[in-house]
Image 1 (tube, rainbow, N blue to C red):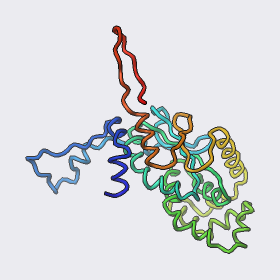
Image 2: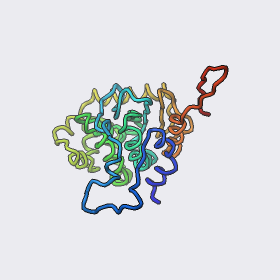
Image 3: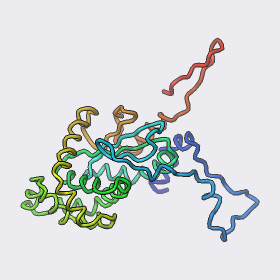
Image 4: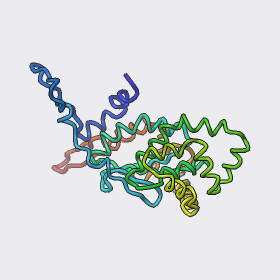
Length: 266
C-alpha cells in the first residue's frame, strides 16, 4: 500500500467519514461495463467546487471556502525537506476530503529561514492568485532537484545570493532552474523578473514572517494553526491528520432532565 493510500485509509479515515465521503460499490450481480467511461466510482464522487478558489490574503494565500467550518494555516519553508514531504503526503487527501467539499480552508504562509526561502516564496506568490497552488506545489514537489544545486553551488556564488538584493534573487532563480519551473506554470520571463526585483514585496514577506513567528510561536517547519490556534506537537501529515480527525469527530450528546448537552470529544 503506497503512502497516499495508507494515509487515506488510516490517518484521515475519521475525517473522510465525518465529511460524508463514501465510494459506492457496484452491485455484486452486475459486471461493470468497460464501454462507459463514467463509472459508478466517478458518478459517486462528491463535487469539488472549492478547489479552484484561491485568494491572496494579508500574509499568504488561502484555498477553499472562506466560510468553511475550519480554517487551517500551513507555515512552510520552501527549503524544508519535511515541508516537501508533508505536501506530497497530505495535499491529495486534503483536497479530496476537506477543501473541495468546502469543509476546510487552507492558507499557506511562508517562513523565511534563509535567502533561498525568500527567492522561492517570491516566485510562488508571483502572478495570478488562482495559480498559486500550482506554483506552490511545483516548487515543493521539485525541491529535491533544485535544492541540491544550491547546497553544492560554489561558496562565492552562495555569498552573492545571501546578499538578498534584487539582482541576487534573480541570479539564484536563474542558476537553480527555478525560472524554468515558473515558466512551465505559465509565468512570462518579464513577470518573473519583475516579481523577483520587487523589493517592497520582499520586505513585506519578511515583516509578515516576523509577525507570524511572534503570534504563533513558530520554532520549526512545518507548523500548523487550526482555527487561529497553533497545533502543539503537530509537524507532519500523520499528526495533522489526527488533529483534524479530532476536530471533525462527531460530538456526543447527553440527555439529562430532558435537556440535551453536547460533550466535546477528548
